[in-house]
Image (tube, rainbow over all chains, first blue to last red):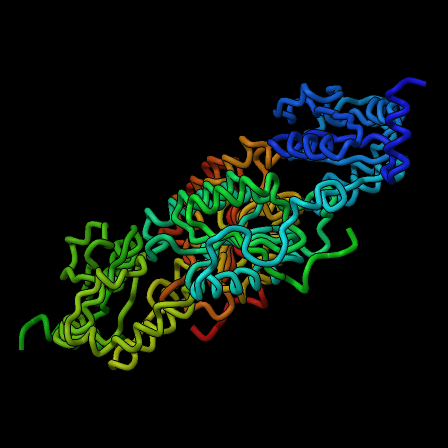
Length: 300
Length: 300
């Protein structure tokens, strides 16, 4: 028995389920998660998704696979003894021409066909079903990086004033009533109006639009004013697709003269939360966790 | 009695209510409307709003006024015998520092204060109340340019295929369920997803965003695909604020590879409708009028 095996057995004793597989998409999140998990002592195995993963994960045990190589992925995970799978970062919807048609993929074809139409929630729920049907367990940020999840109350030293609190409440109501549409996770509210709604463009692009809105006179209030409100959708698959607010989001909001960011407590991921707190304090922005829609979905 | 007076009396005999005042904001619409009205033989008086009006209206009897010069506007309209007022084009929300504080403005102050917060609908309804309180009548496109309002069915020679018809239905449902939020008048629907929602940025900017979405892989379907669906909001003040789809909208949609545009029959303005039909046919796009939300609000 190697020392690696011995160490793995020891970890299993303290309650984990073998090495954690991290399927790495685009952005910084796979690296953030991998570093956090390594800090806990749990063994890691990283699968870099070709054409998506752009972080430097060379410090970790890893392989590179094309998207859709379902058969090879399954064999690799089984060989490594990985039952728990964490999907980190963003993944584009693959074009059919991008998919590597190995035998595992063909087997998953009927599931994939059902996913081809429909919003992100349907796709995420389908991905979970496919993995679980093969004996794996999809784990999410609540299990893997609980310290990076928003809690109720202000994160840094800046707190929302009365006007911003009204915008937070208005934005939260808008998000709640759009939830069933499987669209935006975020809006910008300002003085009783919703001036921007996120759909497929992503939160940072939506925030960036506020610069154009101010320049064109479509937002007349001087800055700082306006609040980003971001939440999960009802029934959103938070293990695979938890909304994220990162340092870049803080900087984008500061750049366009917004007053702050409100996130749904329990359901928004704040990776490298200490850096986010510092960036917000430096920019004079508030970041505050709020209860939205009766609080987070506790199932995941 | 001058010949001008005689001619005005003659027009009143055939059923109009004296000269039509056109308050001209930004864009091409004031010119389109003025030309149409002149074609009917009705007398016109154009008020160009300073800093907003950018069309060449030199062919018409006109004055230029700063926004918020309520007192001077009232006197001018009364001197010219204008009871009917048509507001054409777009108006930015004025900053308080832009308002000319004449006596009429001060009188309207309490009304304006009530308008300062709240969405477009509240502002529009407030503007109508202010004008009507002073004895004027706000008239809208249905009365002034009925030939430029969308009717049910295809406008040009291109018709939506089955996939586009499903997107139209999905987009229409999304708009209906967002109506009470006083936000978007338009969405882009594609293969069962809402990929863009309009808030304060305007329809053409929302459409332009689809180029970025395709480039970033957030829309994977090859073009032409995707449908703009545009409608009025429930209770929207259509006399002041009827949604508009113009030639520029057609060109924007063609440029980003959308399949077509669906507009709410009876509640969307298609200025220079013949040019819109030609532009759509040339671009291979459909423009189709559809019933949304139980049909148009017939009160206005």
